[in-house]
Each structure stands twice: as structure tokens, then as C-alpha cells.
Length: 144
Image (tube, rainbow, N blue to C red):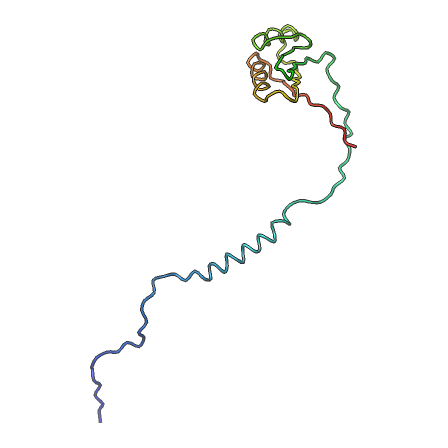
């Protein structure tokens, strides 16, 4: 006894359509979890530990016996030591005070109301004259 199989029309087992879109729900879930972890961990990364630092045992460096001051007043008036000069005369007057020693440290004092550009022009003029050791002077603020 033999059974004959009919080769009739074939029927698909599943009638689903193909979906070419990627499911990003797990990706979004992972990203949200990472975002929460970083939001919690970020404040812990800052150093907020109070430390009482030791004092400096080294002796402070002594100021030069004859410091060379370049001063700029609020109205833009320029001085080398106590001699009033113009920006064009700055190099000549500075060479006269320092004895043309280009390694002399110059102390640039600018009034609080002086524009930043004015101080930069003075510093650039001094650097063009060959002086590379220029220090800015500020008032010492006393903390109670």
C-alpha cells in the first residue's frame, strides 16, 4: 500500500511581511541607562576635599635694589620710573634707565581704568626693544 502525495499548490507557513526597519528600542534603553549613570557619577568626579596646605618654607625672593617701573596712568600717560615719556620714546628711555641690559626685569604697572589694549601696546613696544622679562604689578589684596 502506497500513499501518493499530491504536489498541489504550496502554502507558506507564515504570512508575515519582511520588516527592513531596525528595532532601536534596546539601543535607546541602553543609552538612557548610560546617561543616568554619567549624570550620577559626574558630580563625584570633582575634587571637593578641603585641604590645609602647608606654608612655603622657602624665603621670598628679594626685590631688586633698583627696580625699573613702567607705569601707565588712567589717562594713558606713560612713565619710565618717574619720567614722563611717549610710546615712541619708551625704548630709548628704558635703555637709558637699564643701561641697555636687556636681561633687566621690568615691572609694568597699569591703572585699573587703563584699557587692556593700551597695556598690550606698551608690552609689545618693550618686547620689540629686546626686553623679555616683563612682570605685571598688582596691588596685594588683604584677606581678613
